[in-house]
Every structure is written in structure tokens, then in C-alpha cells.
Length: 83
Image (spheres, rainbow, N blue to C red):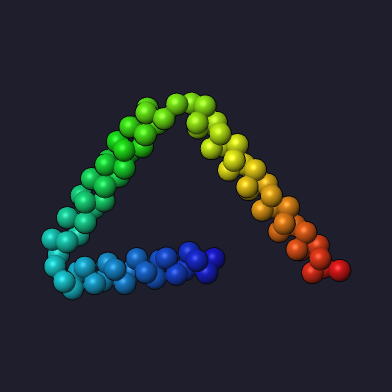
């Protein structure tokens, strides 16, 4: 809840700052954001096309293993502090 409140506050501060600086910024900023998203999407598409599936499988398995081990360590710490 605190994170959401902080993000909303940040968005309000940025919006007020943009209104004070120049009203055209409200039109330009979303256009730049959409262009950035399109560029990132195209880049991700290129990477997904060029990297072979077995490499993605290895990355997914390694990430899953890291997340599971992190979860086990966190669980062990929580249980140790509860005792």
C-alpha cells in the first residue's frame, strides 16, 4: 500500500512539474513512451528469434533453480527467527 501511495505521489509530482514547465510536454511524453515500448518490443522479438530454444530452456531452468533456492533460504530464515 505504501509503494502504491509513493508511486501515485511521484506521478502527481511529475505531472505538476510537466504542467509548470510546458503543456506540450503532456503530449510529447506519452508519444515517446509508446515509441520506447515499440522499440523494446521489436528488440525482444529479434532476441527471441535469434537465440535457439535450448538456450532459453537452460535460462528458464537456471532462473527457476535460483528462485527455488532463494525461497528455501528465505523460508529457513523465517523459521529460524520464529523459534
